[in-house]
Image (tube, rainbow, N blue to C red; front, side):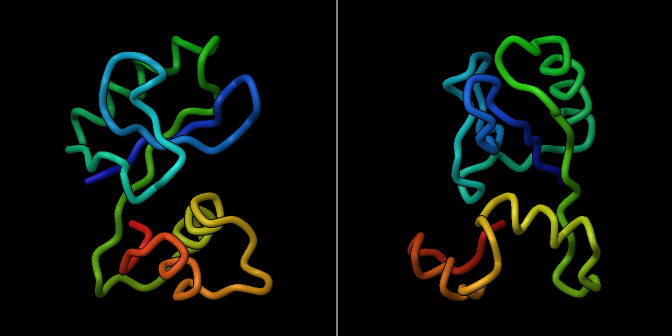
Length: 103
């Protein structure tokens, strides 16, 4: 399973693909991102890479299993989804968004 992420061209905000064929199908909340099968993620990646007038820097984020060690990429995506880590914990962020976890 994978997520698709990018930055909105107009303001640079981090977006997560949540479904749909236009920019309204992207969300700023990673918890609402659509979990994609590998083939679907690859197809959407190619589709959105060609649409750089709407989003830029499109790439896929592999989801990690619960028993997988934390990797550098996971930490990066956590920061992209939640903002700076200084002054807050993942638990604080989860409480702020009223959910158990980010991904």
